[in-house]
Structure formats: structure tokens, C-alpha cells
Length: 255
Image 1 (cartoon, rainbow, N blue to C red):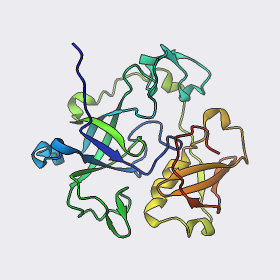
Image 2 (image 1 turned 180 degrees about the horizontal axis):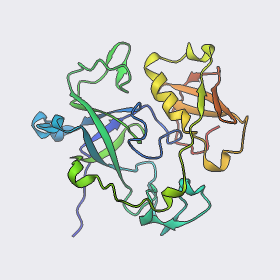
Image 3 (image 1 turned 135 degrees about the horizontal axis):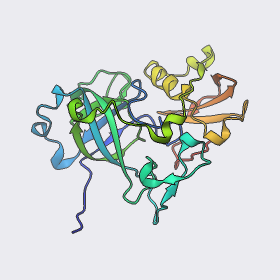
Image 4 (image 1 turned 135 degrees about the vertical axis):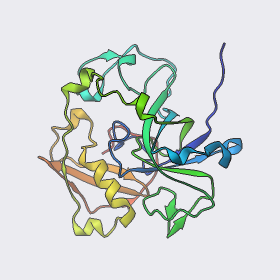
């Protein structure tokens, strides 16, 4: 029996494009998202008791990865894009049903525009720009306005499996870059952006096959800004040619 599922809301983040997103949720607590509930689901009683949990599971739509067909094998970025594994042995967005699963930290439940967190994607010009019932979360790995299908509490006694094996992900290690933001660039970036931007850049947002391109300029759209950066060795430097973001369809190899 087929059944149509509908989004219960959308999550707002500072990533209008996929480029620069963390490769998994929970890796970057500095990156915040504001999950707003829509229509009939925007009811306070539907969230009763949720603040007793520190973390949540979000089930969501890979809305920027919809295709008319699917492949049984994919090339995970963790393997450098050179080795194929089964789609069901991966977290690739290119899946038969395009469903994503993320674990995030719940920071607060808010509504009515009272949020005063400057890192919140809905915070602008000193105030919250939304009066919707909202969950403020951290550790996101989703683009702005991603549809959310469901929210479930993270329950440590059942969800945490210390004995779990890592599969092919055990072969790779996270390599962090030193992020340098010169004073001329820093003066153009809002204070609320700095922590999240640094967190996004230190994991090297370049595609794996571009990691040898030292000195080549790339551009990252983060919130309302379009920022240039280059990588030399273990140092990523943000350029001063920062522009207002011109939001366009995602480009995985933006430069």
C-alpha cells in the first residue's frame, strides 16, 4: 500500500547551497538551524515534553538531490570518490526515496519572535524575523528550507551503540585546516557568522578531487554572503572580495 508523506515543517540554515555543508550531522555544533513547523503541525502540544531531551532525530527530504532514477552503487566522498559501494551501505543523498536522517542537539523551543540568538538563521538586524513555532537546533547538515518529515527524540539507551563497527568509514580520518580570516575580511562578516563559518571551512569544503588544487580560489555562499577562499597546505584563507550572496541552484564545484 502506497502512502504519501507530507513535510511537517522546514529547517532554515545559513547554507543556501550544498557546497560547504558538513558531511554528517552532529560534527559541527557551531552550525545552527531553525526548524519551523507548518500549518496544522504548528501546535505547542505536539512538542510537549520535547525539551526534556537533549538531542533529536530529524527525518528529512534530500530536496536538492531528486532524480528520475537511482543507481545501486555510489562513490562516497570518504573514499575520495574513487571506490563504489552499495547505495544502502552509504549515506549518499542519491537514494530511491531521497530520505535523510540527522541527529541534532535541541537548544530551545521558541515562537512569537522572542529568540535572541544571533547565530540563529532567522535572526537579523537585532531581532528574530519569524513568529512561527520553532525548534532551534545545532549540528545541522542540511541546506536552507529543507523539508522535514518527522522529529523523534534521541534515546541513549537504545540509540547509542558503542560496539558498532565503522565499515569503510574507519579508513578515513577528519583533517582540519587552520582558518585564517584577515582583518579586512573579518570587518565584512557579521559577528553571528564567525563561529559557524570557521567550523564549516576548517573541514575543507572542497570536493575530494580538488584537494590538490592549492592556491585555486573557491567561493562559499554562507547566509547573505558570498565569500572567496584559497587553501595552501594546511591553511585556508578567506579573501577580501566578499559579495552579497546571489542565491542560485546548488553547484557542488562552485569556484
